[in-house]
Length: 342
Ligand code: AQP
View 1: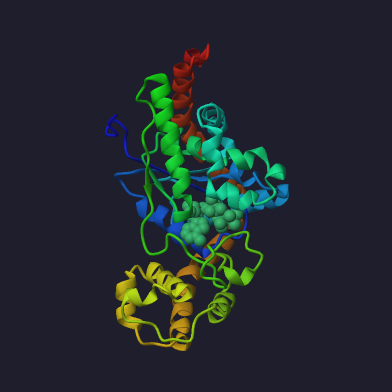
View 2: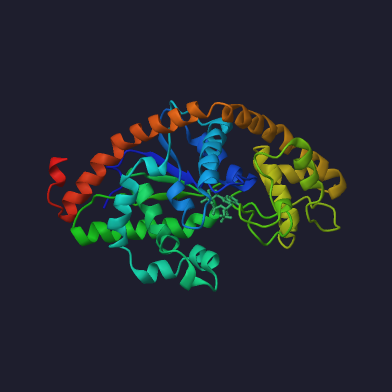
């Protein structure tokens, strides 16, 4: 099978589950913005159907979806250029996910690290949706025939499963219909770690607010969180090899590097030899300079929620111009009567 018959198209999504944080920004959002351009069609989604795989208060879910939309736009996504919408307004995602539930195997899902981490020891009480999450994610991507998916490191396994589903579907039905998608996991911040524990991913659901920088934090809070971030007593090294065993130091250098669009080597050439007492204020100043304009713009956009709703509805309409024909063709391939007449 060749991938060349598929037009280059980017798809990615973020869950509107509150606490949009620096990891989401550097690992995903900032890179979504970088991929916008004349040569690439870009489709970005607030994946509200994924968010409800764990309990969400309905009012908060609505608020988080609109706030996330404001975050996308404030970070630089142009809703006229990119297709920007919330997943539940495009029903073909869930419809294709059902087909993929019948293609994917139980054993594949049981191996997923995110399932094991999130369901933990309480698998019997986890939702069926949480188990089937990667199948819906495969549908999100493949219902656009997307070829490139920018994500953080934690989503790598789900993207491999997306490829497995596409390959099995194509083989089962003897077609060359779904592309074998490329994960785009690049840059210094593909895995931003907790500010309190360098071995844990920065995460929306971490009980400690001090573990993450939220995109809605004000300048003082950002500076305080960086000042209190866990570190070690040594000075920063001048070479990246010197960060290997120093998880927290490496995390702060990687954050600095991603925020300043430099490589970690370039950053260490500048700050190697400095103590954290000197480096942390530099990082705080940089983080405030980069994030404050985004959080102020988010707040401004949130003052006009009707406009946000209009943008999401228009994005969904544009998205469906792509998804309706792809789902119809999928139904035809699978053998659903009437699919050709819709
Ligand atoms: N710490 C991170 N570093 C780099 N990238 C990250 N992403 C998430 N955390 C980091 C990337 O952000 C995108 C959207 O993620 P999501 O909405 O699917 O949520 P998630 O990965 O489940 O994020 P959280 O914060 O970890 O949520 P909880 O706490 O609910 O599990 C993805 O591209 C992801 O890789």
